[in-house]
Image 1: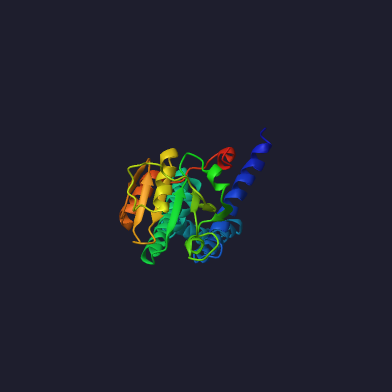
Image 2 (image 1 turned 90 degrees about the vertical axis):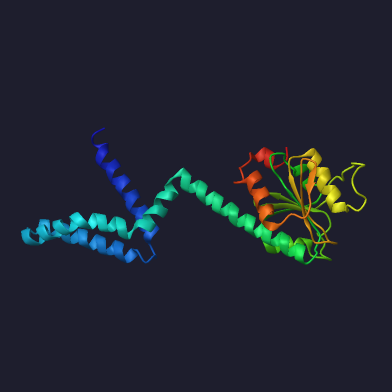
Length: 255
């Protein structure tokens, strides 16, 4: 086992050096990294060539150089360590979700300003694959441009609902069941009735944009909140979804 120890050490050192070089490569900090490596080579050479004065000076410099490196590379080291930690990974997921939420909110309220009718179902824990299969399957990465194009007037997919699964547009032109509540106002349009209908049977969050008034409504668990402002819109979605959880493959397929 003892003869394997040097090989293991060399392998670990090689991996560490490769990680550091790949992280700093093509950055402004790479010049400092190369300078540090040059300093180490000179230090080693001064020892091999038996240059005691130069070696002593370099050792004195090296004692303070370690602290200097930590100060200089503080931002880079923080990012590098965050890539290795679960907390850093979760922070990146939160950042990605906040970016998605900003884009979704911006898209919804742009359609609101233009009085473009829209109906969006955000899948939570109950899979909506059964409903998605009745529409046009897209499986497209979410983007405001794609979403607003879908609901643009006179486009083939603007009728019906869009189903979002995490940050993916799963399907468009989906026909949702209408609410059969007899107490609903007769002035409530088809989009809002469909939003309430799905919210009665699943835990999805439904977003409806009125073509007539431009107001944004949110429905969940059979309750509809109308005239939702953008800050409250973001707060409701963030409180419910926070960071989207990965689902098993069977559930993603709606099985």
